[in-house]
Image (tube, rainbow, N blue to C red; front, side, top):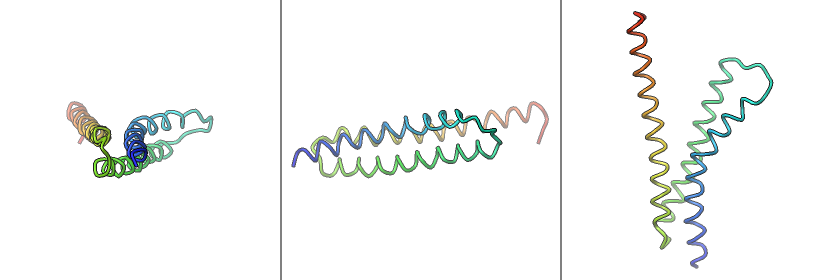
Length: 112
């Protein structure tokens, strides 16, 4: 059934791209509400962003593995794996860089 192979390959790529696009767009759109915001609301939004990305990443990984296992179009599966890997690598790198900058700032001001 070659039609299922094509659907599986395109779905893997589409969900991988959605993992890049949907969480940041949802985060930005969450600030459009007119209610007053407190710091816990922002923390909740960030946690929601991470959870949504993790869910989309898990779905993309499953679809990518299925694409690699059962489809002749394995390029889309590799693309999905690479997109998810790069996303989480960029996320971890941004956390490390922001932590490094915060430590440097604390050392310059003399705070513990």
